[in-house]
Amino acid sequence: MVREAESAPEGQKTMSRKREEERQQVTRRRRQQTVAGSVGAVLAVAGVLALMSVSNGARAGASDSPSGSGGDPALVAAANLRACPTPSGSTAPATQELPDESFPCLGSGPDLNLASLAGTPTVVNVWGSWCPPCREELPWFAALDASANGRLQVIGVDVQDTADSALATLATLGVHYPSIFDPNSRTRGPLRWTGGTPVTLFVRSDGTIAHRIEGRVPDEATLRALVAEHLGVDLQK
Image (cartoon, rainbow, N blue to C red; front, side, top):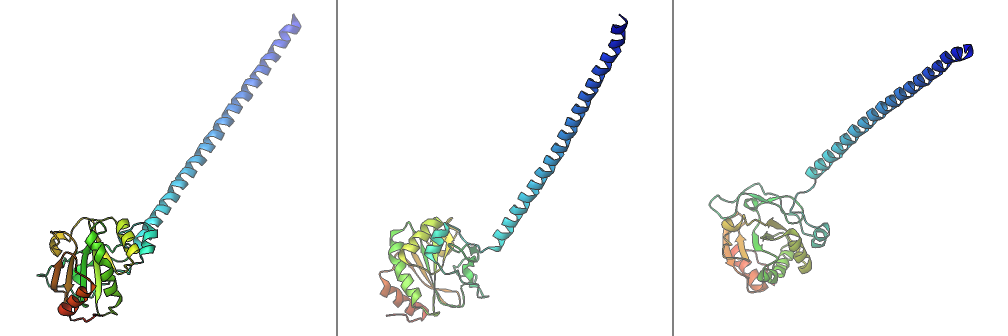
């Protein structure tokens, strides 16, 4: 009986030590979980900051890149359009029909304000890839542009279109002079193509409109004759 009485306190001590060890283990686990959670939070914040940095960099890069209508890069490359001309510093008189507002260049390149075309005689052709007579006459304008040697510039105005359809059409036809992109028909009133397309404007070097044709030009020879007659630039073959 005495031995049993003496062994009881020893058993209680053992149980107490076990409970204390268990409490210490629980405390250590909680500390480890807290540290892991803090590290995870730090890593998460770092990840967010990194993504923000990348996003800001992408936006900065985008603002530094050339503007334009966009479109499939492969089609932009295939069309190989020249960049829209830079402003000459003068604008057409306010009474003329050329709109004093900027439009994106088809594919890529700087935006173009049509009222800034003064300085060089210009043929402006309103067209769309969806327009059969437009597609028929585009090669004639391309041939005119190829023979101009800086004496004349040809500018297309692509309307009610998608960039990809327009670029694919120009690539197929071998047309490389610049076009502006007007999918929402902002030029309809100012350029007076309310009756449909194509419409061609013959613009003098002072920015005033000398002549206009509604509908397809009859042929390349007629186009060259009109340029000579109204713009004084003889490119007839």
